[in-house]
Image (tube, rainbow, N blue to C red; front, side):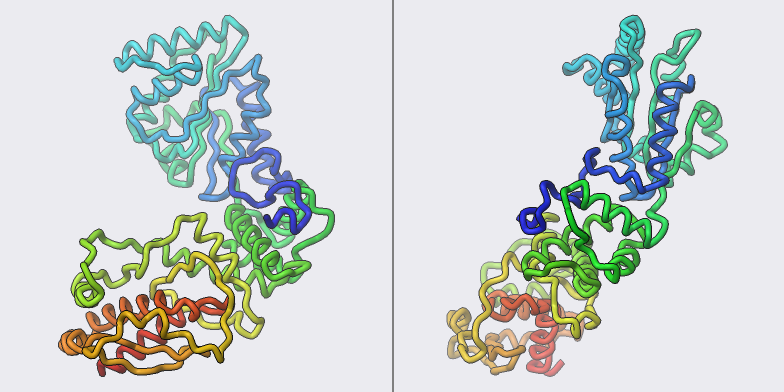
Length: 445
């Protein structure tokens, strides 16, 4: 565990809304939290709104606000998936207030139950506070229903407050002239911005490391501008991800601190994996054998389909950390972002270049009907063993189809020759491209 390596008692950069890891140096977040708490406790208005881009810290802000409310005075309800029918929304609210599942489905009855719960809570000296995260997912109808819901109030004071947290499109909807009746009921309207400067990013990183138990600086000064740049100028979620993967990679290689070189490559690797992950493979029937696969890949595979299934986010992060750190001279190597990434589940021991074992995993592919050439890929000699009848058919394809088929076969060769990607310095995308180009030369396309 990298926490033990760095003498930390907890993970400092997990992207979870953990109040114990709150960095009060994030000025705009600190201001929003303070204003929203004041709105809930003091102002006699129905709504408070928190706006922020994805990854800015809205959910953590809600957790900080909830934790600041005395449970004997406030009953908190948290809605994390508001894109549901209003009746379902009411059922969820009622269920959290009563601490038991609400079985009622009739909207009018649900409103009566909610009204009763409001006054019961008031009689017991409690105020109900409804926090709606990802509020940009609320439909227009539900925004209006929530406004009407706030009409259920006492003559002297509001019996409950709704806190909406969402992205910028929520702000646009609330500010629309059609929403004027709702907008006028908002007591505070706060916005969480990015970390505003390199200095703020450094303070953020230092604060979270100290909260996790760090005794010394881990990130060098020259790493901060890179983190600032690669995190889209201070998006906290991206800062966390880059720092976490850098800590893991530095542990794997026994580094005492993290420099700009490590952060640069982690960031480049992260961007490349992100580009790969957004590509989606269309479902199709898996062929019965490799020869059929080669033809089907050319005819049916989308232009930007992934070669293999994209790993889950946790696996992607683990793989990124293990294969990220390269020599300084390679840090600026051109990334090929338009081709699929080939995930590697683990990094095996590097084989000696003199130990030519590249053929042993491909022996089952060799038959008298195969045509194969020997090519050097890095330090290894491999064979491009492709059935002759397949080659003849591929030569009839247009260039685009032949390119897809060559990519499919290149992925298969990499799978059968794990030594090609066993080194932490190996770039599987570059290797895949090199093999694919050799196949295209072989079929003269």
